[in-house]
Length: 299
Image (cartoon, rainbow, N blue to C red; front, side, top):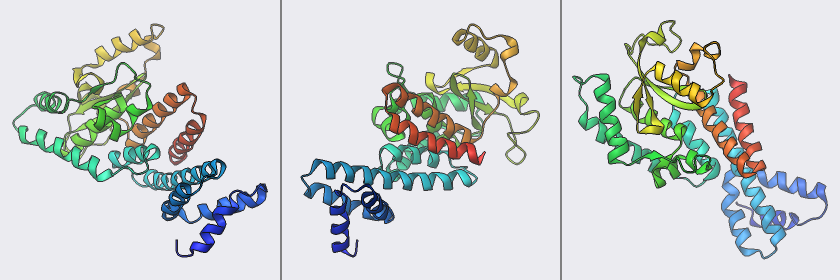
């Protein structure tokens, strides 16, 4: 910040008991955006008043959230074709200092390891088996089945650190790599679970809204179970096992169709909201709901 005296004066006014003055100062400091965060962090370190420190923390969080919200809205209002970008924005909600390039480089390495083993003579099933071997056995990604409601399962940087995730975070990583490899794999927002599907298509003519898209599904992939391959019949069996009251009349054909990337990110957000609700983190639930509402508005 160029005017250090102005900044110091504004910081001191954060202690003012007058709500109107405090609100004005808070808004003024927020207006400087993320560039002011290093100054706020220094001010926090130099102050010994716990009330002022708390207000600085709240201010930093607000600035960071507004920045995330703005970027997320831009992503949602665009064609939103970059699933990885959408997921990384959500990761930076919790980890604002996240180095996205490090995550992208790690994903590129996995992609290269798979690419080396692929060739055009392989069948779709053979390609997926190679993909699964590299992703789950070589790079050792797995499902966090012990604590599936842990919000850390939904942040890609933590998934890379722990090599564990939930069905949506593992599915997004799987999709991002598949897209780099030009494999026709898409997300399917199955009730109670997120899965993937391999589509038989000509790249020039495929549309996820084709009337015959379901007939072009070769098989489904379970990212939560080491990429296990299964059929629609097996999906129905699973759904009825999860919900014994489910009847054939309750089954909608749309359950089995690919969904767009905004829907996938909405599933990621919904999973996070559920996780934080279970922990009683109401403020985080409210903020994530704001992001989810932006997706719904854009739809």
